[in-house]
Image 1 (cartoon, one colour):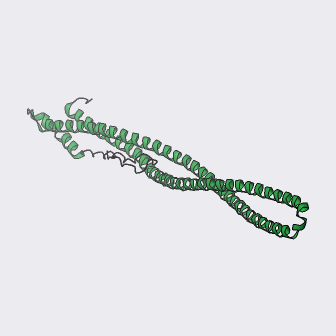
Image 2 (image 1 turned 180 degrees about the vertical axis):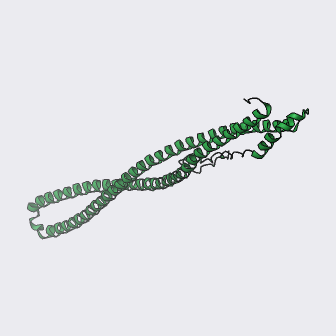
Image 3 (image 1 turned 135 degrees about the vertical axis):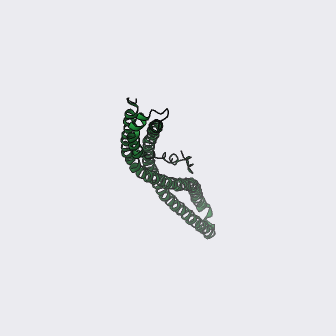
Length: 276
């Protein structure tokens, strides 16, 4: 039997084996030798020689009979091995096809999940980036307003210096309130901005991992599809051979049995007894 070919992928099916060689065709019955033996039998028996040509023919035909039986046995053994190979290979390929179909369904589901997750991460990242940009603009605008307030405070303080005692308390209170409001806004905005930026970093990393998993899964799907196609092609090629070999074998067995029976009949005539 030929050596099995080694697989190049861990996920591929078992190595495809070559089937056992088909049993040889049965030899045709040497009818001319049988006819000659039957023709010379009466003459040889009348001569009374110790080793007559008929006895030589009998020995030859006995050898042929033994050889025919041995070849029949060899064909039966070889056909049984071939039939076993067909059965085992059919089961193996059926299993490989089912497993490949199941894995393809799982891989397709994983691809859909990874694509959906990547799309979701892309949208959330865009939303967070928009929020970060909005907070940055608000903080810049607040800083501009605060500078204008300080400038106004300085100008107002110069104008009302004569009435400073009365207005100073109100103005300082307004300034303190404005400063506090500014500080609170800046602190809250900074915390929110940093949180959004951190979330963007995490989700960007997760998006990269999902895209990498998507690429790997698509590669696995392509490899598995190729293995399935190869298994289906080999299975389709194997079925006609296994079916036709069974029919040819039955015909050869019948012809072999007929030849053996002819040899036995000829020997019975020559020896004057039945050959078992």
